[in-house]
Image 1 (cartoon, rainbow, N blue to C red):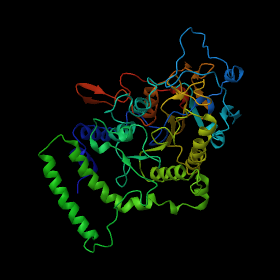
Image 2 (image 1 turned 120 degrees about the vertical axis):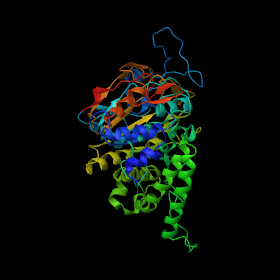
Image 3 (image 1 turned 180 degrees about the vertical axis):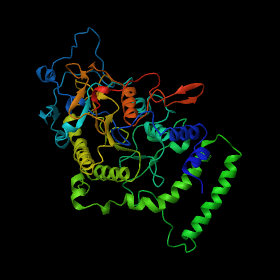
Amino acid sequence: MTSRRDFLWRFGGGLGGVALAQLLADGATHHAPKAKRVVQIFLNGGMSQPDTFDYKPELEKNHDQPFDPGTKEKVEGVTSVPGKLMKSPFPFRQHGQCGRWVSTVFPHLAKRVDDLAFLMAVASKTNVHGPASYMMNTGFTRPGFPSLGSWLSYGLGRLSDNLPTFVVLPDARGLPYNQKGNFSNGFLPAAHGATILNASANPPIPDLQPSGKYSFATPEADADGRELLAKLNRAHADERAGDSRLDARIASYELAANLQRHAPEALDLAKESKVVRDLYGADDPITGDFGRRCLLARRLLERGVRFVQVWSGAGGPSNNWDNHTDIIRELPAIARQVDQPTAALLADLKQRGMLSDTLVVFSTEFGRQPFTQGATGRDHNQGTSVAWFAGAGVKGGVAFGESDPWSWRAAEGKLYCYDVHATILHLLGLDHEKLTVRHDGIDRRITDVHGHVVKEILS
């Protein structure tokens, strides 16, 4: 048997093994971490900030009037000619001791605002879904770069040898824009790629257990097979040094053996009480899919998964947050799917004492315009969007940044994905400027040459 450190050194994939071994030797972090795990809710399609969290009285005052920002520049839409200003069809109210404005599409999350730290002016460098999703997940608008979960796996390693480090739970209706590119390990060793679970399938991970049709498929035969495969694969890998795919394959066999023992229990939501299932809306036809995935995320975090990403919305023109046609009809439907389960996840983590060392991130790829597209739709808006953090090391009931009077562009405290990623890494004990990989002659990092920690939201 090899030690975990030896295994990471031998089979972590070249530079990945060196970096992981060094971080383990140094205590695994650059400074004392506040969080040890992360769950990210990602809203695929572009959540409409002026209809959810970014209350703008100016839109009510000038509803149905032509949009003139007073800057003498031409106002343009992304996929259509700009319409007139549109107030939110949904009433806003102030909530919590902090008095945060939230629209009626998020009644459950409105009750949790004192636990949340809002980033009110998150901009993007593109208003196209694919590049914007890449940017919010990898720090770059082009494919081929490692995702946040892969960077965390590379930089911090596993919390458990029994379950994956980085798990993605896509929407049951399909993968998001860019398909699996949003979860890619990029140029990092393949072992740091995401494990994608189809939570709606039964079971979510196929073939964990041998079929009863084959009497020869015993645990003893399985162990003998793994031992032989390990010898063959390691001999093959030794002859092809530097191919991280081979190292990842070896690691995947080791992980698969542990998954056979531990994954069935972790994925078994039937073990949860009716009270907990009802809290998440796990059996409701509207909230069920997202609720079960949020509940599964909590179970995975509880058992040692470091980073879980829960997606809302599939790629394509519908079944997501890309509300071009009719905000009045489209937004409440998808918001209702997410609202109760997300609030339940916050409450459940807090009740179990896990919120003190778990970071919760709620984000989208870009926002939407203050003027109409067609009758009551809204077009893409790279100028501003809203995200929020909660949990470990985060100051609840605060907000940083502000958009302009129309929620058209960031006005104060403008942030990009670089700042969001830098803050997440900081809370996990990593300095975003030090977590680098030499690739094609460049010391690459998830924040490129940008980024600062948003200290204003830290406790």
